Amino acid sequence: SGINAEYGELTKNRLICFSAFTRHNLVRSFPSLDMRFQASLILLASLAQLRVNKVAAHAELEGGVPGKEAEPWQSCQQVREEAYTIRNEGYTAVSKAGEIREQAYRAKDEAFELKEDALEMKESALEMKESALEGRLALQTTLVETIALMKSQATATNLYIQEIRSTLSSIAARVDSLESKAEERYTEQNKQMEERYTEQNKKMEERYTELDKKMEELQGQVAESAALTNKLSQRQRVWMSEVRLISHFKLTEQNNKHAHGWDSDIIVDGQFLFATATHGNMRPYSRSANDIPGNELVIKLGGLFRVHKIKLWNTRDTCCMSRLIGVHVFADDRLIGSVVETKFTYDFLVSEDDPLYAETVIVRQPLAKHLHLLEVQVWGNGPFDQGDIFA
Picture (tube, helix red, strand yellow):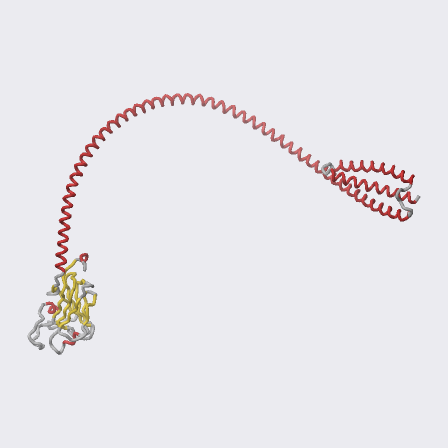
């Protein structure tokens, strides 16, 4: 009897386990089914299996437990453990069934909310439909009024178009008349232009012939002018090759003039010869008032000349000839030379490779000495214009 009781408990636990297993397979096989429908299938499958297992249990109780060994207490303990395990799994399946039911309730609530939203959307759609119908009626009314207005305007437009057509016809007639007149005028003007062109062409040919003759005459005159210019250039070069005295009787200046008449004009009077070398018998000469630094004599040539040579004539008395040592000779701002020794005359030449053009010649004594000279001679040619300078 103890074995039969344990086997009955085992059969009960097997039914619970089979119910859970059947529910699991149905959910896995039909995941898209409604939750309530899945629960119904599970319950039906459990009831069916319960009836089958009940019949099998009665058969086992009547005929004994097949396949069991002779040790009943050990077998019963194993069956009891299996029964507990199956029962726990059954409780787990029951709790999961409760969760499925709660999910079904929540789905139901969500369905009710969706239904309410659908009703609200339906009411909004009805309102929009009414608004659309009212707009359609207003649009139909407006279209009828517009069509009536367009018909009235079309009648007036047809009348206006007829007037425009008549006006265009008159304008076309006037345009045709103007075109014919313009064509006649164009023909007449074209004829006049051809006559004028022929006349102008004839005059231009005569003018060209006249200009050709004048060009020939001008070419002859240019050739004569070129020959004359060449001849004048040659004469100018020959004239420039003549070096002459260009300082004779030119204007002079003196910055430290002597009170007794030893004036600067004496150095350009051409008198540089004397009978004796004594102080009392010499020709007149130029002399500064005292022996201060910077005594100076200036000769103004009166134009722009090419300078070839500057010559200084010293006095002939042996007592004062050394006073000329240290004198600088300038042509405008260019230094020509300096006196470094005692001599009767000093020649300062300008190289042909470095031509010099000047308007003034300056003799300056930078030392604290008297400046006295018998004569200053400037040799060169000119005068020249500023733009006519060439070597």
